[in-house]
Image 1 (tube, rainbow, N blue to C red):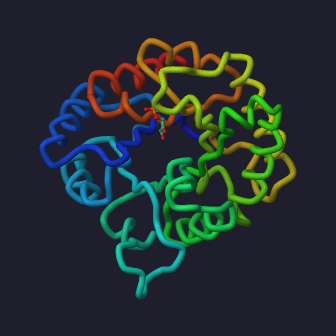
Image 2 (cartoon, rainbow, N blue to C red):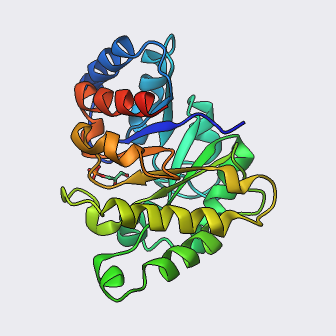
Image 3 (cartoon, rainbow, N blue to C red):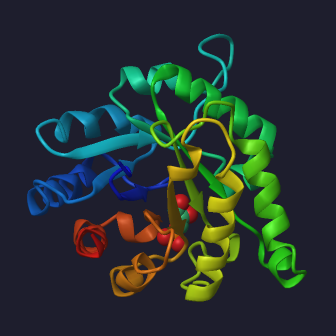
Length: 249
Ligand code: 13P
């Protein structure tokens, strides 16, 4: 059976304890969502968000983890620590981490293996820059990222892939429906032949998803949900995206 669709919010470096009121509102508006509903706040908010979402269907995730389980790595947190705090998911290889922290595909694969080991579902991000798209390199870049960033034994239960074109993040620009369909179909074919049921894992689109464009994006083949930045910060906006995903069935 195909896993439930996923509406995932990435708060990035936004939000504080007062923002947990948004979580209350979101959970009250969607007590029994017809899709999986996830927010990935800054690490400091994981535990309090888990506590405030406790009686609700909201799941909570981290935005990064270290590849090692513990040790002398000042400032880092491990997958096991995220799991201990109540997280179910972790975003890995976001383009902002690849750009700001020099994360390579191999780094992402090592972190994802640690996440799997700790019982977390890894949301592995891939996506081309505008220059790469203009140069006709989109599919080769995505192919390399998929081949290099997914550890062995990635399957539909422990891994999600988010296609986030770098030029669509936070810009209000989105690819055409045909461009999204082309990349998602390509990713699906790349996963065919991997071990387990990797071919069935959920493929999210991310980059300027809003309540106004969500329904159109969710109608595209091989789009199993969204990874949402700015529009995940407010309950009303994220709730609109959740509703669009529920309606898409
Ligand atoms: P925006 O939705 O703000 O474009 O961000 C997308 C993103 O990077 C989610 O990880």
